[in-house]
Length: 613
Image (cartoon, rainbow, N blue to C red; front, side):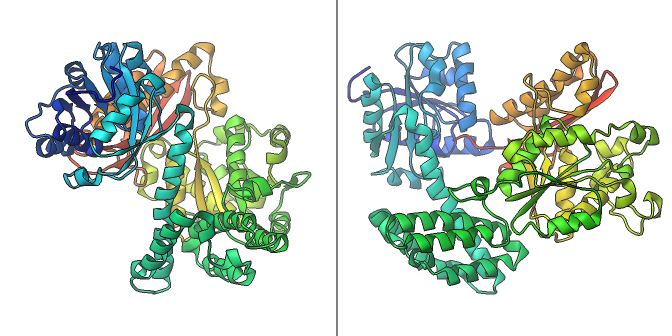
């Protein structure tokens, strides 16, 4: 099959989402036959009925077996798994064409099909889809990124031309950069416009879209035709006074912190571009760069002059033990501050939080405090390790990423009147009574009380918490929102050992046998992620995830549930199924078990109800 026009083909669509249904309909219009399609959600079935009338709905393997041309129009993360599954079931054959429509991937992700002798194609339409017949006319003249082995490139080009598109050849190695560029321009443009509309709404300016429309459309058209020559505005003129005014206006409203971050990051990039174009000189560029770096507020984490590169900690970390000492050193931190709260006994998971903080702000404060109010058992509190010297050495090992300040107070310093005579405390609410809170009454009241105190003392722009303690993260975010605290809560990914086990100071208490048994938790997390990516329902995800831990030797399961990320209410596989609830939603999978007498937890975020592409 190396001719320029593929001829009449039997087409099978694996994942009849918005893209798959439209492309299948377009191929049918030009003479190909759509012989089968797969789709499990009500939306997919309705789309097959309307866009691909008369096409039978079959299992994905049967779809592939029936087709000469297989469209794998499933979510990006599922392509490799779906291709492997079909290949394992004998769904691919020699000479068959297998293509996906992901912008992110080239043909390497289709290796299971290639190994079966099929012809792999990566064809990405650079347009948005509604999943209706309106898209068919929009295919005319639309650019399609085509990636394929050289001998079969003509097949991909011919398919694109047949349905009215314009093929653009993208090498396999350039596929990631290609997709990043398109996403940066299209997705982030939407973010910028929405942020601008919110600033206008906060300023009580009506109909922000009408005001922004002519400017943004003209700017986009000029940028597409003239490139960097289209630069306008105060940065391109070196007008530092106007830029300072913008920063002050945005910094004055807590609701605009994220917009301030975007403004500063893009203004820094615009400064570099304006200097490159000769619009401003070195002195003007230096003035703008300094202004954008030093102005108070939340900075961006990337860019040539962003916090990640401009920031460097003090030659030595300041270690303070009293509130007065902390306030004094905090006053010297004149730019953005991120805080990482710990109870010491630091391991690599804690250090990963410090690294994340260093990317988010110019200065980093780490607190080390064993908080008595979150312990229900006095024996547990007494047994908790205090390893300040080793903790400071671990932080120092981070080198340039080490914190600027370590605050290590005593219990008397944090609670001068004693923990039983506190004048006020934070009550965590109903979320705190579920899951971890159910077995540790009052625990989260103590956690939120100390977190609130430390946020008040450190006055950060960013607070970094690990995703592994998902319930704690949800409660902290809820408190920050409820009390209008002017900061951003950054969730750092779960840090894992090389074998996948979530990092925890408790892992050291596991025997070698217990360590092997504990891996059931990380396998459970992986199963939840895998089934959700494949479009599984709540019940599907829970069934697969629980199966990994329910019968594992040496594992006493406490809970394994999908919960709402904010309320921590469990999602019921019967009553809250994405197949019955239209739309995509995030969910948090949480699992806890006792292994070798050690309580372990793990978690992940999954997307439920994602429509196939």
